[in-house]
Image 1 (cartoon, rainbow, N blue to C red):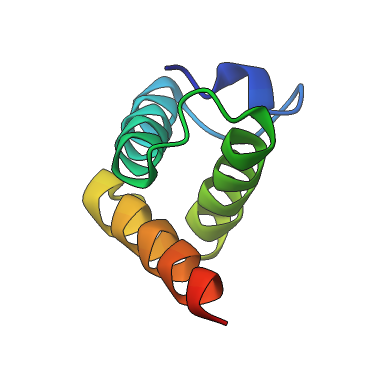
Image 2: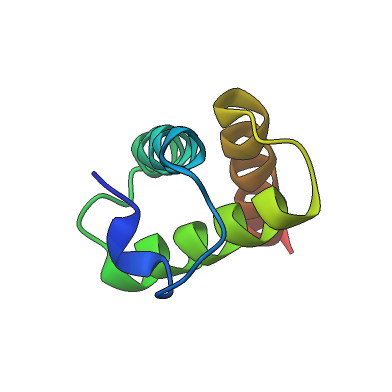
Length: 76
């Protein structure tokens, strides 16, 4: 499940970073069971891209952070 479609033209990510973003996106969507939920995927992609711009570029860290955010928001 690639994240390419969510990146704006001219996004400042190199190919290796895009691969990390895609892996984080795929893992978060799988863990949250939102593969068929277009709006859910949109939100996950937006969060992963935003987090990547603000911090470390690590697929595990990014996906775990988004999963945690979703889990917390489901309770509230």
